Image 1 (cartoon, helix red, strand yellow):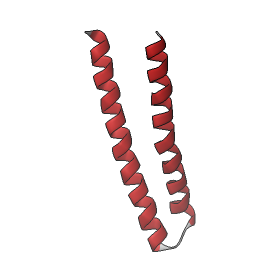
Image 2 (cartoon, helix red, strand yellow; image 1 turned 180 degrees about the horizontal axis):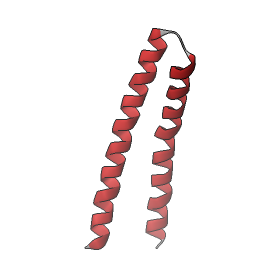
Image 3 (cartoon, helix red, strand yellow; image 1 turned 180 degrees about the vertical axis):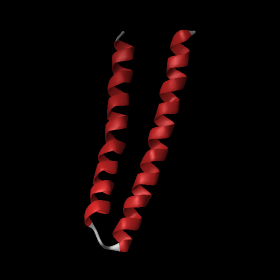
Image 4 (cartoon, helix red, strand yellow; image 1 turned 90 degrees about the vertical axis):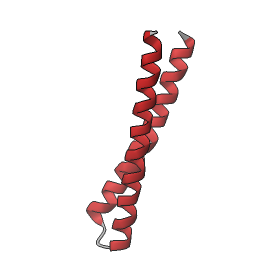
Length: 68
């Protein structure tokens, strides 16, 4: 059970980081008229979506291992 709690804590942290970065990028897109800033914000969003996709795939694989 301790291992599962540790995994849950790590997952929570790993998901919270990209969500925070995405929130900041969205705010920049809403408030900035600077095209360079908007481009950088879009790049952040793309990276963080890729990161979250990878994390969800890892969680899926982990869950599959629990069924074995």
